[in-house]
Image (cartoon, rainbow, N blue to C red; front, top):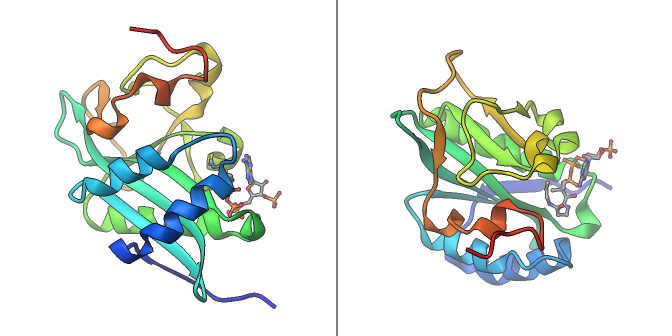
Length: 182
Ligand SMILES: CC(C)(COP(=O)(O)OP(=O)(O)OC[C@H]1O[C@@H](n2cnc3c(N)ncnc32)[C@H](O)[C@@H]1OP(=O)(O)O)[C@@H](O)C(=O)NCCC(=O)NCCS
């Protein structure tokens, strides 16, 4: 039986469930400090939850940001987590699509993501070469830096994605063990 999934913006009362979801979805990576910091930035975070009844099945954060040298409204996607027992049921795709629709409605033109092209390519993301991430990426991650245009056809003006403080950590932009100690 396929259970109906409700997707909505998260509320503070969802935090306990969100805090349980991430260690389950990412057993080898502690993303909770980032998630907590992003959720505190209420003006920039679009946080969506997917519920199957009372069970939290998925969560995603989009961070509203801009591009240095331009005035376009854009967003950065991540983290995204789906409960292991609910994976491969379309929940990750549905929650990302729902977020992109909300962002498009508020005038966001492009969404950026650092993630697996095999997954995000299915959602319409393509490798991004003109707008750089906040930190240079190692060669093996170049293909992982992707974008999707929500409306308009012009590439955004500017050269580097400008993100709020929680994303200004080099460790988030490099494979483990490859961060510059400075
Ligand atoms: C990655 C993740 C968010 C996908 O969510 P989901 O709800 O399982 O994905 P969907 O059901 O929307 O899409 C499933 C399809 O995406 C693909 N897919 C799923 N996880 C993938 C991954 N990590 N890499 C590449 N492709 C993946 C599969 O091919 C699958 O298609 P198939 O069932 O036809 O083979 C989820 O599996 C997850 O939370 N994984 C652990 C945390 C993680 O790696 N998050 C980072 C996202 S890059």
